[in-house]
Amino acid sequence: MRISDFRLGALGVCVAISILAGCGGSQPPIGGGGRGGTDPFFAVNPAASQFQDAANALPAHIEPRGSSAVISDVQVSGSPHNYTLKVRGFGFGLWPKNLPKLPYKGDTHYFRIGDGTIESGFLTNAYPLDYALWTRGRIYVNDYTVASPSDCIEVVAWNPTTHAGGAWAGNIQPIAQGTPQIGSVQFAGWGKNFHMVVLGSGFGKAPVPMPYRGNTAFFNFVDFRYHPFAFNNASSLWGAGGGSDPVTLVYHSWTNTRIEIDGFAGAYGSGHGRTRTVVEQNDPVIISVWNTTNDLPTAWGGNIH
Image (cartoon, rainbow, N blue to C red; front, side, top):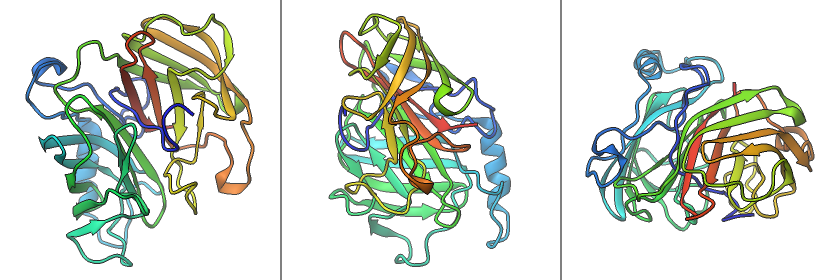
């Protein structure tokens, strides 16, 4: 495993997936050009945002779009080690009744933020979050204390009732020069032949001769489908391609601007029931890429459709 059991990511954009249901992931920063700027990272998917506004008007007992949950954008503001995150999307559900009323500072089973080494706000994390707002379309948290400018952060939210999840990833501005970027992610097929194409820039040369079957220190696929218990208090269900992950990847090619993967190998499909190491419809996932020369990371976050 490359970093930690919950494997964290960075900057990305959802282009190839359905704009309403699938683009719940990261988008490139606007304002300041991503390097040396002072504006907070703000990414927006207009289609998802419009749906989210309609979803907020529904009666309390109705959940929009069945079991779907999508994060359309995240706004980060504040100062190093004292950030506020405003998460927008749809399908988040309502604040769990078994927890104290908002505002609430602590951990939950239904939300997490990571920065590459530390996870905050999930289960018994040592870094609680100050939850200020939770509606079907908005989640606001304060007092995110572990991140600094250019750090990779990763957000996953699960509906407390349906357990549907949404994922997002991005860098806090200003972003370090040399950080790679993901422009789009394309998925095709299912099962072991689940095909991925990651397009962008700054990935570096192939870390090993291609084609290649196995793990590397520069690419990771992580599935955050909700599970009824946590592995070592980590929020991810399973991952592939990083470090000693038992699920490995089948690489077709790797260039500075394109990574193509033909499927999974190794222990893919192991486990039982909801904890099987398989890709399922609507799973929230994070794809992380590290530049093979400077080791700076980026990532895409969204849902499988």
